[in-house]
Length: 375
Image (cartoon, rainbow, N blue to C red; front, side):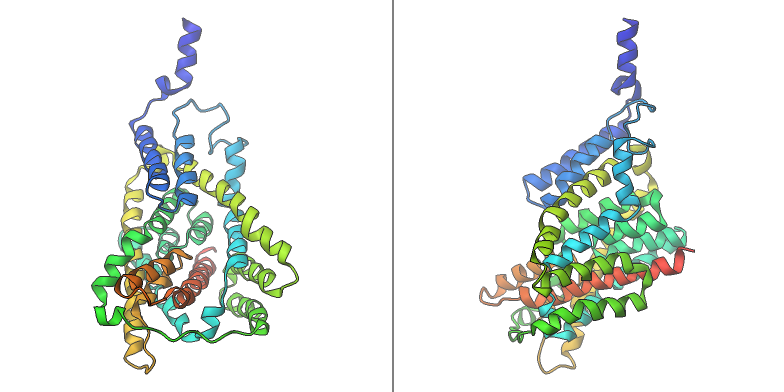
């Protein structure tokens, strides 16, 4: 009986915590939302199961926990904290992204830039709530609705908040179809939602090849801290557009990004140990993340309305919501909202312009924060 009792003490009997039970319930909820409701299953299912892995009550010293040096999970988690996984995901995103819509209508880049207002307003709000500057910068990047960028920056500036920031960022990305439509409808009239935009002109292959090279040089000069993100993003796009490295591009956008997504999601979920995750700071981060996402969506829509005041060729303000950079979900939401008003109004290609511009914008913002606060 003594041996049996000692055995039980190693697991849940000797290490029971209501916090762990709460996190296990949250993990099951994430899995449910991913499978039953189809809310970003590629993200929520790995993160949800990772929460189960990271919150099984057990005694320290077994060398299996994600925060125990040398454990399997700890070694895999280094890809999160050191920024390996976010950079590799950007490589895959670049290999599957078509920048033609943005290049054909460059003024739509401004919508992607406007949506980054959520980042800087959240940064200011975090400072007002008493967070240190580095923590506030890491929290602010949630407003870009770009999970890999949020993980990359928090790993560099606020690793103790990484789990809370990553879960908040990916949760709101998954809830894009729920959060954005009401904001779009609140800020636009039906007449504005019915605006039809002209088809974009074709973009030459030469321009599509030159763009990733020139854009990387410009962005790296502005925000050198984002080189590891933007370098992989534009390199992946060059593999796609060059026409001579299709095998490499296919590997980056299919098996590589799938493998990294599995590891990233599982490790982020496993990092949410209740003792580290269920804190007042996490609650504040969740609230700030929700507010920043709403502000970013509203900023993109309102800026599109402002542009229409000075433009003869009107922009459907719905596509301003795509500037939050949740690729390609925000663009799909814009198409869905527009199609409800006019089934023959095809906005998705136009929405992809601010969508991919938002990806670049959030990475540049992360580079600016990193350059400012890393020292």
